[in-house]
Structures are given as structure tokens and as C-alpha cells.
Amino acid sequence: MSVSPHGRKTTRLMKVYIETMGCQMNRLDSELVTASLRAAGHEMVDDHGQAEVVLYNTCSVRRHAEEKVYSRLGGDSRRKAHHRPRLILGVLGCMAQREGQELARRFGGLDIVCGPGQLARLPELIAAAAAGEKTVALDPDALEARREKKKTDHRGTEAQRAEEGDWLRSGTPLAVPTNVGIPDVTDTDDFDSLDMAREGSPDGGARSQAYVRVMKGCDNFCTYCIVPLVRGPEQSRRPERIVQEVRRLVDAGVTEITLLGQTVNHYRWSDGSKTVRFSDLLADVADVPHLRRLRFITSHPLDFTDDILQIMAERANICEHIHLPPQSGSDAILGRMNRKYTRGQYDELIDRARAIVPGVVLAGDFIVGFPGETEADHEASAGLMRRSGFKNSFVFKYSPRPGTAAARNMPDDVPEQVKRRRNNELLAVQEQVGLAHHRSYIGTTAEVLVEGPSVRAAKQGFEPSAERTQLVGRTRGDHIVHFFGPQSLSGQYVRIRITEATSLALRGEEEKEEETVSRRGEER
Ligand code: SAM
Ligand code: SF4
Image (cartoon, rainbow, N blue to C red; front, side, top):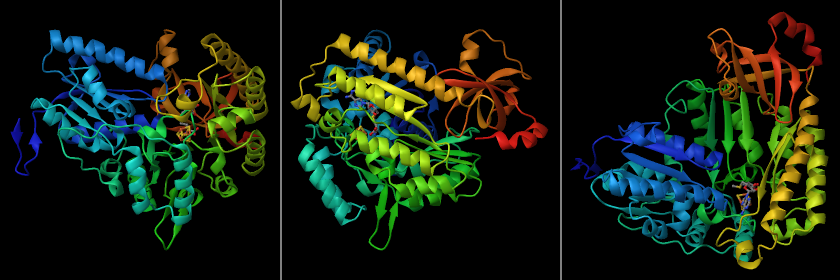
């Protein structure tokens, strides 16, 4: 190790492997971290065995995701102890924030524990680790951060007061250990420095899709959810910076942008003179020249106001797809989950979305086996799934998360085998609903953004050729479409005549220009 003229530690360049668990937010974080490590001169490798630095970007939403990381860390620690003493091991993201020092104590071979808000410091932490220093770098305690937020909030005073009430009523922060080894340099007003440092295309190569974060954290405190405790208070990014980042990506060849937030439709920026709501942000981003598709995830039903639906209907490049997790179809369970809407309000929202945004495609998330869930509650969830006609749904078995209100106050009283059965039953309902949904597209033509050769085809032993391989892409409604064509179509928009459907995907054939003109009237 040496010391740079600025007094910062530098290190020799290393081979870095990063594995990502969890949601799109984590995938974006890993992409930004990868870019910053490349900029610092490190080489990213796909082979875990070759790496000199192994990083896990982790998820704490369910216990299962955490167990996977413990198992990986156990194996890596043994490898380090017996064969690779200089291997640098790091845990990033939500598990790092949740467990902090405890994780470092449990796995003695761990060099870096880095919370989600500290990722910009990673090149520095790797340099320190190469010099033999272990670091636990965490975001401010969730309670502290919420107090701080009061001083710097850009959501306006009324919203601030309402939110304060919310988290004081329902949220209890975890006891998070403080930073060790290096000073805390968290700047709550500059939390998007990694995003802004991003250069052009998402991974340095040519890609047509990219995620852009519009906010971080969450103040909702659904009683089952760890996110507000590990990702901290909700903070919206300055709108100009979001638009600037989108422009840069589009200039570098990206044509489809997905705006990300835990409750993306709760985005709000206010600086006293103007207030930007989520619908205003959508309009501003949609105006970026040459942006062909604009998406956003994940939406909270409570905040899905009609101005958002209107702007979706008005702007041609905003895709008619909404991921709108209901979590449950029963009012009793929704109440205990602190979701703040009723079944009736959810049903009405779906009806309004269908009325205002023609052809809107909906997707859901459900939790089965939440404390106290009866067979009648479970049947209500199945009923909601049938009524909503979701394209797809993610179904999760309830997993108590330490520190959440549900884990503290509600016994996990639905037996594991009942959770498993309900999980399978909801998946079976979704299969029927998804099949009916996908079948309704047979005979229509869809615009498909081609993502590349299909992994499924490769697994089935299909031998691709440059002229003809099985390709996979997505429609504006986020349907997966398989078809045969040349690999050169990757990243292009093509028109596909839909001929077959399963519960999860569509299959079709590329339509040539002349056919497109004659069949335009059949589109939906
Ligand atoms: N912010 C999104 C929302 O409000 O719907 C969801 C974010 S959460 C990271 C993703 C999904 O994980 C949730 O929609 C929920 O279904 C599931 N989830 C969260 N906590 C869970 C828990 N303790 N057990 C099981 N599933 C959980
Ligand atoms: Fe978790 Fe609820 Fe926030 Fe979604 S809205 S991240 S489920 S607390």
C-alpha cells in the first residue's frame, strides 16, 4: 500500500468479484459500485475462484436470502484460513447494515462490512483492507437519520409532519453499531454521488436498458418489512439530477429507462418555490429526446393518484405497466400489515387504472402466512388475484424480520406447512390468471425490445447460429416474448406477431414491414 499526494490510501489493482442478491435496487447498487471500482482501476471478474476481492451485495428482506450469504461466507472464510490468506472479503448492502459488528464478529475473515449508503467509499475500504485494516462502515442509525431528515427534507413541511407522525407511531429503529475504523463521512444531501459519477452506458458496453434511482429509503413501516430499518428514511433525489442522468444514459445509447424507488410513486421534491410530484417527474423524464420507453417500480397502492395515471395515458413513451403489490386481499391482514389501504380501495384503484390507461398491465406481490392469517383471509387474497388479472405475481411466505413491528408484536403462528400450501395455492391461481392474461394477446402484434439470446433455449440444448437463434425480449407491458431471429437484433425494437402463450410468456414471429402496415388496426 502507498499514500497518494492527497493523503488517501491507494492500493495495487485487484481482481474483484461481486455477487448480488435481492431486488432491482441492489442490482443498480452493484452496477454503480462496479463502475466506481473500474474507474479506480480494479478489474471485475466473473470467476469467484480467481478473485482477490470477493464482495456480496446482500438482501435482508427474507431470512432465506440471508442464509445464502452465511453459507457463502462460511466457505470463503475457510478458503481464506487454509489457502488464501490475502483474500479480501466484504459484505455490502442491507445485511451489512442490519448486522454490522455482529457479522464481523461471527466471520473473523471478513474485512469489509459496508451499509447501502456507504458504497461510494468502497475503493477506499478495499485499499484499507489490502493494508490489513478491517472496516465496518454503516449508515447513520435509522432513528438518527430520521431526525436529521427533518432538517434537510425536501418534501415540504406538511408531508414532513405527516411522516413524522407515521414513523413515531409505528417504527422502531434497530440498534445499529456505529462506524469503526474510519470516520463517518455520510453526506445526507449528497446521497446520489455514485449515481451522478456514472458514465454513459450502464456497464461500459452497449446496452439499451438502464435503472435510475429516484429516491432511497422508505418511511412506510409495513409491519413485516425490514427496508425502513436498513435503507433508512425516504429521500427523493433532486429532479434536475435525475433528468441529467437519464440524458447521459440516452446519449450513450440507452433507449429504455426504469425509475427505481421502494415506493417510487411517493417521489416528491420541494425547495420552497416549487414542488415536483412523481407525475411531474415522469413528464420531465419522458421529455428527454430519444427516450423510447420509460418504466417505474415499485409502486405503493396508497400513493397511486390519478395524476400519475393521466400522465401514463398521455405520454406515448411511458409504458403501460404497473407493479402494484397488494400483499393481501383481506382487510384484517392489510390493517395488521400497516398497508394503510383497504381491499375495496385496492379494487377501485385497479378499476381506475384500467379506465384511464388503456391496456394497462398489472403485476403483484403477495405474502402468505402473515401472523393470524386465516383460511378466509387466504381465500380473499386468491380472490383479489383473480379479480385483478395480474400478468404475474411474486408470492412470498412470511418471514419474521428482527426489529420489525410484526416480529416484535405478532407471533409467527401460521405453521410452515400451511404457509407452503398457501404459497402453492396462490401460485396455482396465478398460473390460471397469467395464462388467461397471456392468451388474450394471441393474434395481436407487439413491439418488443430484444434483450438477447434466450437462456432457456441454451439450457434446452438449442444450437444458436448468427442467422437464427431463439431470442427473448419484452413488450411495453413487460411481457416476456420468445421468437426466432438473428442475434444482431439484440438491443433493437421489432414487431412480433403473437402466436402462442403460456402462463408466464408469449411466443411469436417477427412481422415484416408490409405486414405491419396492413395489420396495424389489430394492435392493442
Ligand atoms: N416497496 C415495495 C412495496 O411496498 O410493495 C416492496 C419492497 S419489498 C423489498 C419486496 C417484497 O418482499 C414485498 O412486496 C413483499 O411482498 C416481500 N416481503 C417484504 N418483507 C417480507 C417478509 N418479512 N416476509 C415475506 N415477504 C416479504
Ligand atoms: Fe417495505 Fe412497505 Fe416500504 Fe415497501 S412500502 S419497502 S413493503 S416498508
